[in-house]
Image (cartoon, rainbow, N blue to C red; front, side):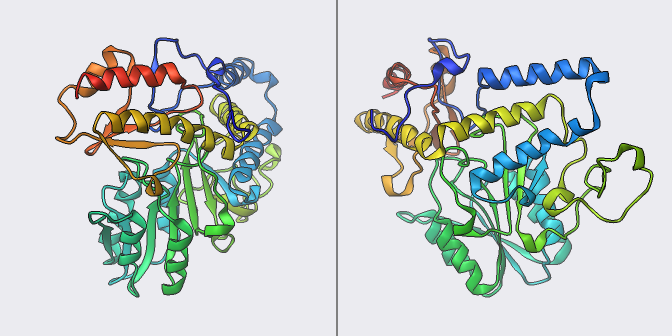
Length: 381
């Protein structure tokens, strides 16, 4: 095994041998360590006399620090949020758009990064423009084609959620700078499985849900806020994001000032005693594995799946355009009727997104899983 790859980590999860789960882009299974962290958190709430004011802050700061390490940012740049839509709402509240401005998004982009901008367009008279990929064209080309002098915001993912096609974020960021457009990124479908460096892209806002490639719980995510927006407007006003909130005895001394950095954007009750320890455990494991090694390992596994798919006559996203961690497979006549149900009967789990069968493995998958997927697909060819 090459030094850059990792051996199968199935023993760290609770996945039966007979289950071939290729659906991390939908919902990751929990690591044993993450489940145990959640149980410890619930146990703490059973004994509230053992929960102290500092407990509302220490683990939150730990999550902030670990996520910042993933993107090479500072802990003060990170806010803790419950969902991508929450992070997009913060970006929308702090970016100035007016009549005639254009917002560029991807065709068939995940709706959490679309609906808020449709509302902004209604309220401001700006216009949401969808970049449509032409035959033989990469998503990056389609986005660059839509960036014009009227473009004031580009709001895109790092990979397309239906099939894992990559976007060249540094090139798109450079095009944004040339026309003075802001950049909002949703990296939910890549961060934790694909290396990312905030300095090479410099988005204004970066948002990531934690329950997919970050191996964390549902309803916990992260928001990076560029320094120039850290004095901005939060979408809610809670006690914990205000200055000196560590002093529980002084909370009735109301203050206008916020905690430093992006902490002003934290969701209320962010110190969730069950979810927060789980999020920390997931992030810590990813950092221990190293994202570059995760990516190399998943790319190796997906290469085996690609070979199987091509032998069966399926279309696979061309190598230069596809991310290492996720595959989109297309049937010549479209997805067969009953595909997911038939595969599920054989304990093989994938997703259909658009016209693509999305295959999203992780380190818990092995060659036996690939063989099970291959056998299931052969029935349809």
